[in-house]
Length: 420
Image (cartoon, helix red, strand yellow):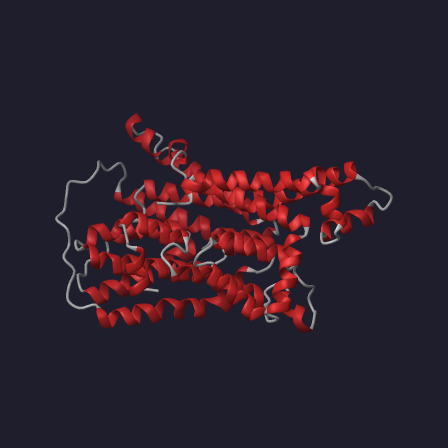
């Protein structure tokens, strides 16, 4: 089964080869006149021409600029994933899951859906899906019943991630890129995202009847944390994530700086917490051990994909695509919708990265068609919503869906028939 981890190498190869193809024929590609950054470079250095200048532009100017932008996203993701992993290893999420006692299918469906919706806005939809899918195995014995619940987790996680600046990779990209601001994406997309979660859970409520059968409890793994430590680490992790938007507003520094600061503070807290404990516990819970569990293949996948998209943007190919979409669709809502539908079969990260490359942020006060592309414009908010939730249409359409499919072995055709 294909997962992000299994195709990370392909993404890295594609990302590198796009830049290789670009630089091998740099002078001709740039002479076509579709690259905006090349035009800006020429305006600064009008007397420079030739193959060497074109290559210098790509190596010393474009790659450096794009790797800086990509690095902001990747450092943010790595830090956020590390914080979530620290909370998970300290069994912080167990504080929440232990509170669920009901066996009524409808009540349980609503409870899990709402919990997933809000958890994914703080964590990310992939992590939330993995945590909630693990919870399902402790709550529901029957496999087919679990499929319905797992599918609803995918929908709720994707919907919950769409309205938060830190809830999905795509919203993180838009937030870091300056297309959206934290307050406006929450106020503008929260209600649509909530409806996206409420409609399917309401429909499933008419199908669900009776109570779930819980699996027989098995002896668990050895516990390394105290009850109070779980509360402390959960509070620290959530506070660290919530601190990032505040940090950006107060300091005007990039969000990844706030996330790195949060990780550093949680690291110090963990060292103090386990200072006098036996080496067996330290080896399990110290940050250096936990960092090895962070999903680095996923980060490398994003690196490869974003590198490829950056090459296409620099060469002017995304500008051509934007012209094609403007000519054929001619409506920002239709363009955002088409990206939403495409995200059910193509990962939403390259789609949103492509859209960011196709359409620069318009200046405040712009009127007409381009007014939709100002910061917090209609297009960017609709793009965050449609790309974030569109992947729910198919089980393979989002990282959350692929994770649920792998963990619960959900059948593609079953999902298409009962959920899509």
